[in-house]
Amino acid sequence: MQTVVPSERFFTADQFTYANYQEVVVKHAALNLDVNFDRKVLDGDVTLRFERLNPDAQTLTLDTKDLLIKAVALETNDGWVPADYTLAAADPVLGSAMNIAIGTDANQLRITYETSPTAEGLQWLTPAQTAGKEKPYLFSQAQAINARTMLPVQDTPAVRMTYDASLRVPDGLLPLMSASQDGQDADGNWTFSMPQPIPSYLIAIAVGDIKFKAINDTIGVYAEDYILDASAEEFAETPMMEAANTALYGPYRWGRYDLIVLPPSFPFGGMENPRLSFMTPTLIAGDKSLTNVVAHELAHSWSGNLVTNASWRDAWLNEGFTSYVENRVMEALYGEDRAVMEQALGLEDLKRDVADADRPSLTQLKFTDDLTHPDEAFSQVTYVKGQFFLNFLEDRFGRAAFDPFLKSYFNAYAFDSITTEDFLGFMDANLRAQNPDAVTDAEIQEWVYGQGIPATIRIPQSDAFDKVAAASARWSGGDMTAAELPTQEWSTHEWLHFLNGLPDLTQEQYKALDDAFSLTGTQNAETAFAWYMQAIKGGYAPAMPALEEFLMTVGRGKFIYRLYGALNDNGLAEMANRVFVKAKPGYHPIAQRIISDILAG
Ligand code: BES
Ligand code: ZN
Image (cartoon, rainbow, N blue to C red; front, top):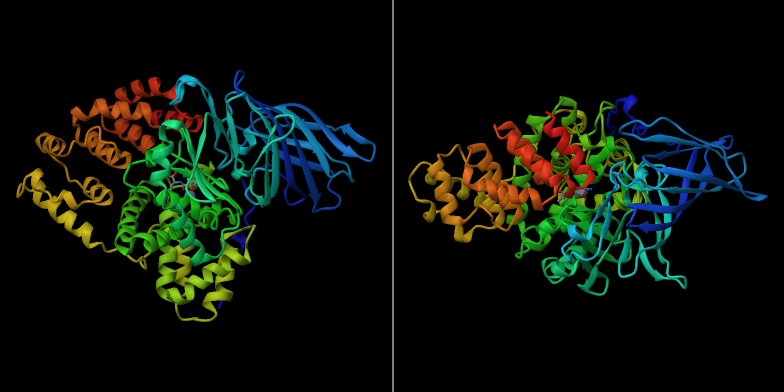
């Protein structure tokens, strides 16, 4: 059994790094940093230990972006000596290659540097921008290629290293990292260590007036006071998720698992920083309806953090696998109906992203070399098409074979960075060889290298959603009033299906829905987002003040990018630009860049 892999695709060099990681590879980074809130910089040094893969290599090339390099020293037989280096002209996406002369023997160097106050990977919040209003806050977001704005590093997921850190922060603030929190040393430095090798995009830091609440002995929540108890309650089922994930795919290998609920400007739903997932406060709905994001970030402890995509062209190995595992865990905890509803919502999003793709090549699971920025690799194609590919394989081979196969995959490639072709080869040898007729080469080629949605997709069938659609049609067709819609039994998922599927409505119909269910200003961020998208499309003006408030207080990209885009495309560009000017200082640098691009057309 042999998958035919186009040969030029077989080895995927990472096009988003300058690092010469095929020659010299960094194995460990030791950070020693002041967290300076007055100047909004990280200031200190990093010591890098490296190994030569090519014994003749005399240059180490690192990624940097917007860093101020102050000194470079090399450890030699004569002790630490200054090293020669150059910084290349900056590319707007990739930053500046830093070439350091490493001679023939040294294996350790130290770079003294500071970050820029506008580093894209760091958001510095003033006290006024926090809930508590008294202390500042800092958090990082290194994925995909912003670790290089935090430290000089081989910023490619192909390279894994261990790290440790010693941080100084102002009194009264708690620093946390994606590492074991080792407490304060005798000098008052906060110390951290990550003994498992990780890619650079998983280096993370948060500093603020942060409190902790345990969920059990190995799992807990960090958050600002105002939301700590609610967060611990919302995420109370995380231990069951970890147990379900472990039962399917083997042990959790990272020690503790904690969550931190960040300020609302965090631009993602969640980020799988090892040992400490970063989460948006928009998940704290009060009814555990949005906890699939916890299942998702936790699942990355296997798919992504343990087995990592070697380049962003292989991002589906991280996000598609994780969406699949997330859904398996949700099924294990809450049953098939909820899991299928979540699949169906995902498929709606996938269809939209396939239809809206800027180029057909962006609808492939394995991307070609035409990506202009790694952001392009993170549409629902990567998440949901990837998930449905694994659903397809699960159906063909059966869970009895597929589940142990995936478990063996996580073990075989633990702490490794691999390509799509590595996965396909492993599957040929360890799944297809035992059952050669279950799938054809052509089917796999269509899923991995083909464009759009494959013919062999398993369409999720949700009776609950069918009932919602039927009720929706009766209401919009005038056969029942809004108050007669059977919403008492609707979960958030059913509401989302209802709202996303609304046909063109009259202003009276929007008002009737709003009067019956108070959708404008609703507290569940997912429901609010779905409603505001419809309100923009239909020009329903009474929702606009609450939408403006939403855009002023929520920085989660999944919501605000599409809201700004919809305003821009539906004759409300003036409102979009007016609100963005006001909201921009509170948004994360990543969100500022993306929304500026959206509004520029
Ligand atoms: N790793 C991603 C977040 C990410 C993607 C950061 C690309 C930077 C670049 C994270 O695991 C994720 O996928 N979050 C999703 C939630 C999930 C349930 C789909 C999100 O933020 O919406
Ligand atoms: Zn993810």
